[in-house]
Image (tube, rainbow, N blue to C red; front, side):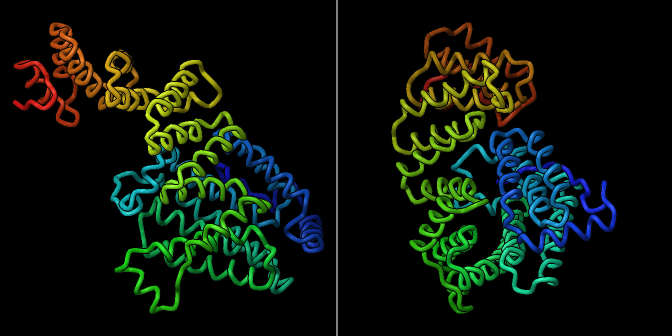
Length: 411
């Protein structure tokens, strides 16, 4: 995961043609793996992992000015726009969405803002152009080829998560794999390249049978075991993709039911970036899958408390929606009073989305009925009818006004 918000041109700002030529000469003499660059990019990425996009923007912008001919900064810009879009959709805080077979192919009415989409494409083109410029001066340069592969990898990731195009994702993924695999054939110690190759190996080995046979006929086969080995290597040794690989491993471990490994990664990531509530929430989701409901609920209530206390970046958590979901989890665990408290708080929140506000009142009414507090329950049901009908809540409320709610009874 990388961070930057908007493109700021580097090559002409504050420099003359002679200085630009000098910077190219220095870059070519040092290579793209200049230690000053890697130190700067790690420092720039740190705020992004903490969900501080603005801080990352400033740092990567400065880094781009220092290295105007490096393909890394515009690539980081593109990746950040992609991740910011996923964050805007609140699709980064739920592991289930990423391990569900239908997640990447499910239709969505959400569209990425046109300006952001155009900027995303422009950033990738800039990174690609800069990498190709290096290759013109130094044919075969592994670092430049690595960035070309990275550009294709990001195009593929964008295609499957935002564009919802499997064909585009497979096309770009294949190109990325070919770039990075060729690099590893020449230099097996180029650890960053193992992330893309490992991901591709895993995906190919887990394709549905009706797609997999086409890949086999085309000469492409995958190896899940090898995929995990490569991802672990890039997580442990990668110079710029270590955190990315760990996040991906966490998701894949959940998919493969290796929950202990996934939980360990989630905890480690949250320890590294305590301001990132996503890694905190992930721990609860994994614990729930491990049937450790009590521990999962403890994690969720801890997240809620940090958001209420204004912990850094936890204010970015959509608290009303999260609190409604927490209420459902508590209700499912038989903790009615605690669930009722959450639903009542959402109902009293003037900034709560209409859907969560209406559903919370309905749920509160149901719990009040179960607790024998009929008059309070009726008040909640009538409040539902005053709101916009969301998810069929009006029909449900009318039914429970006529007859008290009771689990398993209809009509």
